[in-house]
Figure (tube, rainbow, N blue to C red):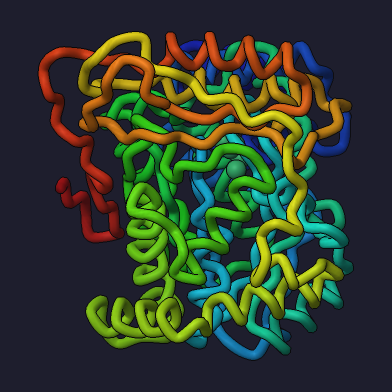
Length: 444
Ligand code: URA
Ligand code: CA
């Protein structure tokens, strides 16, 4: 097969065959195709798009470019949840133990922070002793024994994506629905999930900032999962402000524990609610609850009885971490300086540059600017307001948690520009904007 002919064909806007797509995915994985030809084809796909069939073919060929995990040993239906990434998006740490406490199996392979978004693995590693590197055998055994595990990728899963993702990052070809959908779903399918719930974020802190693009991405992924024979559904949820109040690794662990122990304040209500809504869908998809109402009832009970927090304790202990953090979050790493961000005027909080807020946390050391950067688990920020609230001049918008005073002061100034105040009272942004199932799209 000739890669130049394949590039020319896509450049003309024609659909590629399964064999042509296989040649491309294999060539990316085994190194037989060079960067420049892969990059040219990626750009052609970005500009010309792919049909649903091509997108599904690309996903399956990427999935089979490396190892595929077999979760049949866990003794039940394994359900996975994937978020397209946001700021203060700690739903995994809240709902993994809750859903497991309700009887479904959650075997999660999570990622690290990327760009302005946080990553669950970095958050878990902020717990003293906690590891996210388990062998596949230990992973399956833990899920079988306690019902859940959250770890990093084991083995050589989807090598085609590793190469293509790194190329997309530096060639302006990240924002393509078929490329994003195949990248995410190839990894979810290779990680072995039997059922998949997707949380597609939309708004100022999301990969896809408009609702139309977010719904299109959700539809593409639901179509692929359905073709692959897995129960799948997507919720499109708002990312116009950080979902939780805490942004940063140990800070987000603290907020998750506060929610699971009933100690969180009202400003964590959106994070709690989105976690519950995704949890309902996970229990339904796993066949662990007969209806949405019943799923909700069980999740609320697991929260109120402390069964969810107990499950988190078990998971942390199983992964070598100090589970006492569940009873005393003061044992988590803490930053040296806590600096308030005062409002510069009276007014209603009307909008936020949520991507910018993610980068503030990254700049403090909560994320990586380069792949080799080391994360500071303690730093980040805590939002003191939600969109729609009224503030007086001088009242805190947020608190910066820094280990370097100068970086902390710079973060305070930056935050004052990222959170905008107005005289008119804005509407509170909706939490859920659409639900996408194999049957179609329901808009809120
Ligand atoms: N996350 C992924 O894993 N892949 C993409 O292409 C975008 C987000
Ligand atoms: Ca992520």
